[in-house]
Image (spheres, rainbow, N blue to C red):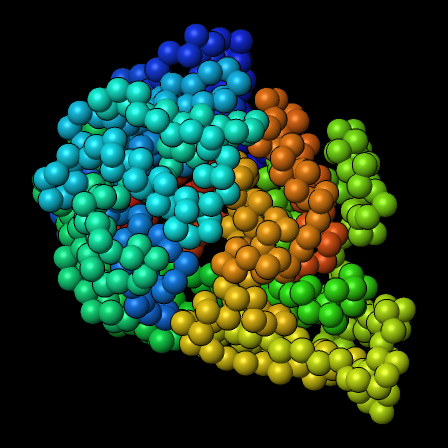
Length: 606
C-alpha cells in the first residue's frame, strides 16, 4: 500500500515529464519551485502547503524534553553539541522543502529558481523583502559568504556538494548562479537548502569554534533565553519577514518552543508524566500499550495520537566498526548477527509487535526486493560481482531465531562461521590460532535504557560463543566525541533515510568517511560498488533508473552485515497535551522533519 501511495503522488509529475522535466522548463525560465523528478505538486500562487492549516491560531507554547545537553549555539560545525532547534527555526534557506512530496522545494528566501535541462547550473533570485531578525536585509553577499564558509569550514556534511561547485557568481542585484563541475542532478536542489547566515555577525570570529553567542537568522523564531546544557527557549519573531508567504502559511504557530534537557531518557518520560513537558514521542509499542495509564491520560489532559508515514525504515541497531581487525571479516559479522536473538529480544522488550528492519530502505519502493537481483538492479551490480559479499546478488535475509532464549540452531551456525574465520573456543574463550581472545567494546550513551536492555540480552548470548564484550556507558558529549572519531568497536547506530536519497549517501557510506572524522560512515565501509550506485542515483534522469540504483545500494548495505538491526514502526506514537493540535492531512513523511512543532498549534478546549 505504501508503494502505491508513493507512486500515486508521483503520477501527475511523471505525466508532466514532456513539458517540465525534472522540475525545470526546457526553456530554462525561472520557476516557483523545483522537483527532483517530474513537476512540483503545487502550482504557482498556491495558498499553503497541504499539511498546514492556514487557519491555525497563533499563540501558546510547546515544551519538549531531550536527553543529554548542549554546549554550543553553532550547529553548523563539527565541534560541540548544539540544539537542533537553532538550525531548524532561527535560520532559513533559499528554498523550503515540502514533506508531502518525495523531494520538492518551493521558494523561501528565494522567489524563483532557474536551471537548464542538464542541470549543469542553477540560479536563484532573492525576495526583495527578506530580512534578518535584527532588521538587516538578506543580501547576495550573505548567501555567497554562507555557502563558501559552510562548504570549506562547516560540518563535513556540507563539503561534498560544495566540492562539485565549479563557480559561484552574482548575476544581478538579487540573483546568483552556481555552475557545477560534474553531472549531478541533485545539486540544483541541494544549493537551495543551505542555511543562510548573516555575514556581519561572523566577521572577525572563528567560525569553526563553538560559541554560545546567539545566531542572527531570518527564521520564524529567535533564541529568547537559555542555560547551557539545561534549557533553551525560542520565541516567535513578531516581525518575521516571511510570515505571510504561502509556504509558511499555517506553520510556526507557537509563541514559544521550549526544550528542557535531562541526563536520562527515562527521566524525560517522568517529566512528561509530571506535566513539565507537553509532548512525548514513544518508541516502544509495549510501553505505549501499558505505561500510559497515569492520571493525565485517564483524565483526558493528555491525548495519545498515532501518526502514519510512508518513509523508509532507515537503520537502527548495533553497528560494527570494520576499521577494527576483528570485524573486517564478513563471516565474523554474520556470526555475531546469528546470535543476536531478535525474536526473543523483541518479545521481551517490546511485546514482539513491531516488524524487524529488513533492509535500509525497507517499507518503501526504494527497498531491495526478496531473492536474487534481477533486471536493471542485477546489471548495475554485475561489474562488481567479484568483490561483493555473498548474498548481495544472490539474495540475503537476516538470521531468524527460534524465539527461545538459548537459540541453539543460530548459535551452532555462528560457531561454524567463526571456525571458518579462524576463531575457536579454547577453554571456554573464543580465541584465534595464536591464542589471542576475541574481545571488543560496545560504547553506549548513558540513559538509553532500552538500548542498554537490548545489549544486556545480547551479551548473554555472546557468552555462549566464549565472547565477553566490554560495555562502556558515556555521557552524550563523550558519545558524540568518540563516534565522530570512530573510537569504538561497536556502538548504537540510528540513521533515518528519506524517499529521495542522494548526495548525503556518500557522507553515510563513502570511502572518505573511513578516515575523515565526523561522517556518518560509522561502520568504516569502503565499497566502490556502493559509491557507483550513489553516482547512478544522483545522475539519473529517469525515475526507474533511480529506483534500481537505490535498490542495488540497499543490497550492498544489507548484505554487507554492517549493522545488527532491530525493529521499526510504521506509525509514530505521540502523547501530548490536549491543547496541542495538528492538521487532518498527514504528510507523506508523517511525523518527521517539518511536522511537529512546525504545523501544530495551541488551542485550549472550549
